Image (cartoon, rainbow, N blue to C red; front, side):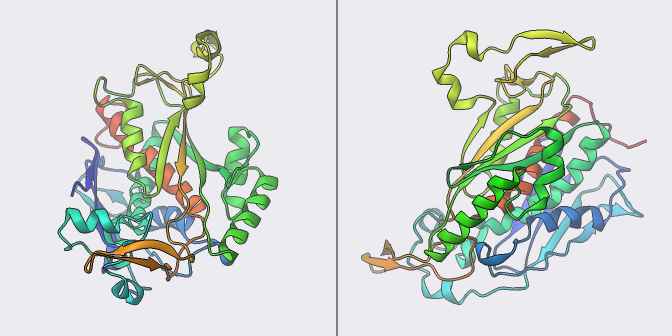
Amino acid sequence: MENSLGKLFTITSFGESHGRCVGVIIDGCPAGLAVDEEDIQRELDKRKPGIGVMTTKRAEEDKVEILSGIFNGATTGAPVCLLVWNRDIDSSEYEKTRFLPRPGHADYTAFMKYGGFNDFRGGGRFSGRITAPLVMAGALTKKLLNLAGIEVIAHTVAIDGIEARTRTFEEIREKVWGNPVRCADPDAADEMVRAIEKAKGEGDSLGGIIEGIALNVPVGLGEPVFDTLDGALAKALFAIPAVKGVEFGSGFSSAGKRGSENNDPFVIRNDKIVTKTNNAGGVLGSISNGMPIVVRIAIKPTSSIAKSQETVNMESMESASLITKGRHDACIVPRAVVVVEAMIAVTLCDLALRVGLIPRVMK
């Protein structure tokens, strides 16, 4: 397995869904960054299940523990190790269906790749549970980026075809955490909640789209031709379970436009070169162009549903059917919003360190 991401700022994820814990080791974090458990816990709490029938019944406390790399309220320059313990574990259903791969999950591919030795309980390393360590890493990187004036925000823009109206950055900041679906459009949020509850009542699930935004990113982040800004961000975002698509700026819609429609004209505002539009999503030639980085992430419907689905028995090689039991979200989009923020922040932090935007020791 490849469990590490980054070059100068590296995160290494460890743990399984139903193992003792999940955690992250962060190497290359500059020394002298003021941080405490509260900073990390605040981000972790954003990932917790919401309310009502739309969320999982698994109730993990997810209280962060700092094992190393932070002393007297600041990073030391040594590897930072953070973890949360898995407390609310029930593996009984997974033991019963060990040889029945769940449609939409990695059960079959993991079984074949690792010869059946993979931890199948709760999906093991392929569970959404592994996103908790990513959020912890994101808490540190957001603080580092803030020192450089860079802000990362994300919000739900669509669930089940229900689309949020365009909002300003200020409105997104103000409203995104005020409802259980993390949508900055309150009217659309209410519709989304009803749609999720309906799907849950029918034993089904929903997917959606999250938009991630990075503000005040200077010109020059990204290392062409292989460590491109958009490529690095896409790689990090695809590490989030259930992500099936990533697009920047006008994305796939640009394929249906003319160059005169899709190009972003350059203008001068306040003695700075900017573009009138942002169809490029803040990335030109795989390098940040100084405009907001805008990326949209497609999240598939939760694979675990309470409907009968066709599968096979990998042991007897016979056809079978399966109803996935257990504790699952009817829609994981809301809980993934903070994870998207984290992966954008981790990627930008590594690239910022590589161009010297963030110092190795905080002054």
